[in-house]
Length: 137
Length: 480
Image 1 (cartoon, rainbow over the protein chains, first blue to last red):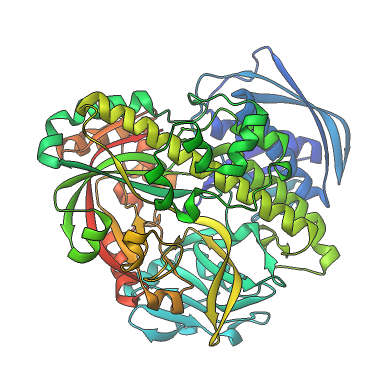
Image 2: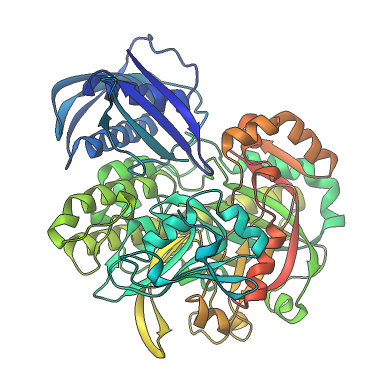
């Protein structure tokens, strides 16, 4: 089970995410970001674009934010939504793999960056990994 | 948690959080606000964030929050801090992701009565000439080698390529170019994000707007700025687009890895900072300057597009002159008086406008006696202001003042309170034409979502850090 929720912020937008595993948490983070960028866009369309990922960061929280920022950059460069991620390797400080997506006609929200502000991945008492993420809009 | 009892009243519009409030604060923090405005400031965490800023290694004077301050990440938006040069730290969190987001004011020689019958067609021409919204590229599609020249030269590249007039350049902060810019410090991802974005507004709270001068408060300063009652002017608000966002993202990531090497531990990751003179600090400073130059080139290209739109409606004999262009997200080396001594400092302004007082050598001849024009955009449907920098501001706020009205409602709350199409109809009924690519995005920027800009500028005026010169009223707006 995994889920995300978009939450209010004075100037920007917060995203709360939770999942049973860390790779799932990364996938739900991407899902939540895409829902903000282009709400309701279908995710089952054939992927036409592919970008490689190879990221290392000081800790798991930084790895999540760095991963999201990298996909955000691809999103803006290609005017595309990357909805499918495959991890070849995944550790708390390093990941590799690729994202796949396809072009979209219109963005609903212009995310400037995914920030480290308020982000802290924790493993809660119910057995889920969770964190808050703040986007700079 | 900070509350009203933690603040010491310095004057009716200046409040201090003393250094002893929190262990680790290196300097006091000061807030510019009326007592009434303070209540809103306590609704979010902007003052807690300001006390984090006061903990920066090498910070000088006071950590400052302007009256439009609201919660950000790292610094509050509306935050100002000077750190020691060259021994202090540089913090991308004190500049923001939209490097050199800023405002530019153009003046026409026409009155609102002359322009009003043509507003609908002017608005359409502007929407045609000035790309806005997410994903819309501009007229210029630059190869990386040419983009590197833009990053080095800023507005100067636009002059070389006939997108600027020679008279524009002295009327831009830093003449539209920071000389330490180094394109090799800007990543390929950043260049890919920016290569087709020159001359584009983007989305969010960015806009190009037709206004008229509704009231003059200081005739002498207005005359120096070329402003008169009922004159039509143009405001442009945008920044360094995806290129600047990526520069900030890249270097915050690098700094977070490097901070432990320098023994720096800060209460918020977004305050990420390293010694200014370290390799990471210099790389960021030079990349930030390149992004700042990109932003000045962007606003210059939009000026060229605006001039095309204007000429299509009013002909070649009706020029648009640049009054001024100011940055409100930037770091620069400036000279200020600290503890009675003039010294160079690393100035961080995040959602705060430079406001140099009379006599500053960087000011254009026409403005040197008056002070720098300070441009404060309000929200759609309300008002914007032109102010002038003061010598008191040079002493009290490192020559800085507010940058806008400041948000008070979240985007979601604004959408719940306001319907975009209704807002557009209401604005039109009050004489304000709007062209936008996103009606729901329009609701997010409704006047209700912002603080009262009249109150914000009155605070900086009463504090003496800038003086009110003119009030502008909008009559046509284009947004992404």
